[in-house]
Amino acid sequence: MNFKKQSIKGFNFFLAFLVFTYFVYFIIKRIPSSNFSFSFLAPYKNLIIQGWLNSILISIIALFCSLIIGFVIYIMTINNIPFLRYFIKYLAIIFNEIIFGSPLLVFVLIIYYFIGTAFNYSNRMVLGTAALSLYMAPYMTNLFKGAIESIDENQHMAAKLFGFTTIQKYQYIILPQIIKIIMPPLSGNLTFIIKGSSILYVIGYKELFYSISTAQSRTYAFTEGYILMLVSYLLITIPLIRITNYLERRYA
Image (cartoon, rainbow, N blue to C red; front, side, top):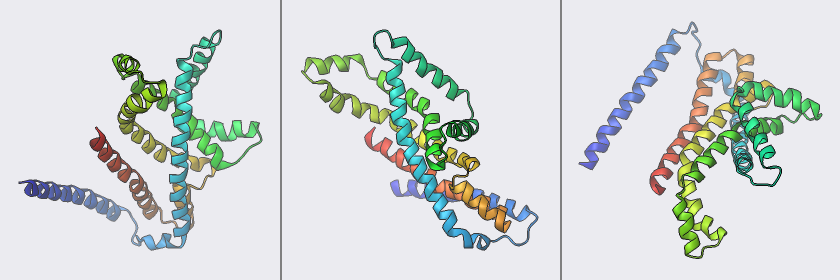
């Protein structure tokens, strides 16, 4: 019965995949071009591979940086420092509101062309990473806020009753639960960062979009380039989603 169910699911997946494949084929055939071939992009394979790796690298760095900044912002919103409590809290709130109301493209341009220029700094990778990290930080703040506030107060009391230290409480009780809660939205944020990294082409950072666009401008293989671009991003995001789903089932 189990094998039969898996076979039915596999067959239906194949049919669904076939529908999408045929749709792509239909679109390609309808484009007024008789020389469709990925071979036009072959001379630029090293450039494209490097761009693909750069997209992954900057996305991972931005994820960890945004987690750290997001946690700091969360601490700022709940701080109890005498005399500075509301000042620090409003700094965090104003920053969050600016980010939530700003498109990523505009924010990247401001970071590179205005803030970078003001400090006489022009490293594209560093400023691009900073832009992605700062932009995602408020979303990470909300992630921490939701996860931490979902922990029942009784668990804190129970840990205190059993003589747990603060470190032991977080190590054995709080953190394991927080990790389970934040895993799905965290993968969603990483997926957003990966897709958002394509915006960095506007500052000349050689990520995937920039690399393929460069190859397109030299070969005029625009159809092939955009299809390759789509597949390349899917090769990053789909495994990420599958791994996250597995971890969620494994540790739920």
